[in-house]
Image 1 (cartoon, rainbow, N blue to C red):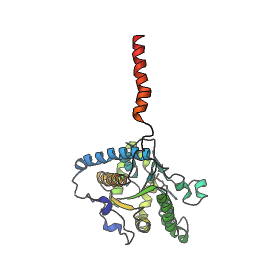
Image 2 (cartoon, helix red, strand yellow):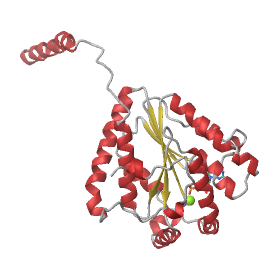
Image 3 (cartoon, protein in one colour):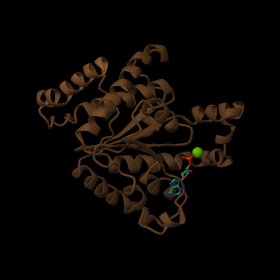
Image 4 (tube, protein in one colour):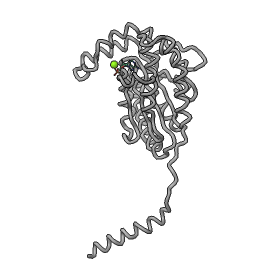
Length: 284
Ligand code: AMP
Ligand code: MG
């Protein structure tokens, strides 16, 4: 299944989230059935991350956006925890600090973009500035509506500098969100995640849908694609995202740098001596 084709948000037509089933599983029957493919992808992602690091010429930025409880943290935990922490990082975007708010909205995002060889995951992102900010009128409309173009230019700059960008919207239904909030209530280990704000934000569901539809359509492109991932089933969400990341990284043409020394010469010069030394130590 070509998830990159299936879930890509076309920049040419208006996105209608209501037309996408959040419980879609692309014909897969169950978590058990999908698990081997997820595990294979996660293992391959770890290999590709090591290769990206060794190659040192490109980077990968993964943007995760969604309403509460859609699974952003789960994606980070399930798909990225196998990677080497040297070269991988996750950054969560909260309400801007006073210092962040005193700068342009892209400042804090730009500070966290991946250096060559690195993978960075944005758990929420610069897109909050056309989402929560729009829904709650935190800045006037002419300000947020000018940001789509600024975001496009920002992402173009990153792409021109060797960064691959993948953006995922985790699509869940309001019913599934409420069920997940209830699980948090029932699980003492996760009580801390509950805030009343999470419930009150549900009143703005249709405003968020509208904000997401416009943001995703206006900022999806071949070079910085958005994917709408059906996410009512956590296992399908993990399968689709891991598949898209793996395929994208396979296409990046990553290579280990050429060896800089003559391996035979080095072996003869240093390791022969080591063997000799060991022999002498043995005798002595
Ligand atoms: P959480 O992801 O649950 O830790 O919550 C982070 C909160 O920060 C969410 O409610 C976001 O909507 C909020 N947030 C993130 N970025 C911004 C922003 N630029 N302006 C206002 N609120 C934001
Ligand atoms: Mg939250």
